View (tube, rainbow, N blue to C red):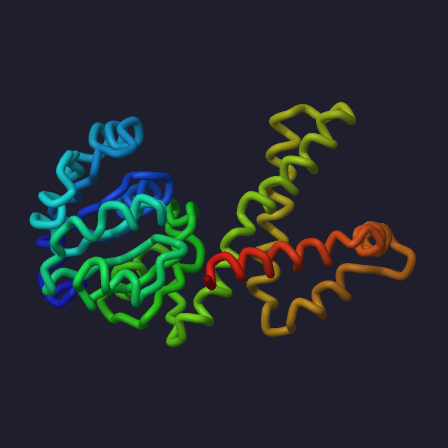
Length: 264
């Protein structure tokens, strides 16, 4: 018996919506040890779909969403909330099919109502799932979904849907994080550093800081902040200037605003 209670070779996935996150999951599957028979994907984002079908033999484009559902054992919803509200109620989801929703602002009760299916798990994977890295928050806990995503990253099961919204909020930090990397590398380039060297240095710098934080997380991040400074040192100066300009206050305000949006 395999991953989901049957041979993993029989696993057939169906993706309704083929955007960035769906694409990242599919790429991550083929970078993992998971073995699947077939992945059916919709043609909604045709450029992404065509590239995936061309690159991976088990991937096949199907234009009809209902056909994807009928042929798949697990259905993954990778569409926007607007599209979800428009199309899901028009589709038939057999009750024996597992649904994984990647939709940010359609809550579980609403999903159950419009799909007429209670076998649903909401998941929050991020693009690093392509390289089998990063946290994947799932609600409600599900052995099937946990076993699936454990091959693609680190699963965090949440037993309270309202609490899961907090993780959705912090998952929205991706673009802001990459903007910090961009600003830092752009500054080096303006100061005369070769572009490739600047990119490599900044990515290695932040990677090492994250890996160090992961290994030392038991100390708490407050201790890491303190250990990274010396009195009147360079790190202290930058931190104090950011605090003075309310960088972190605005950072927290952004999280609060996202939390209000996803909690509606």
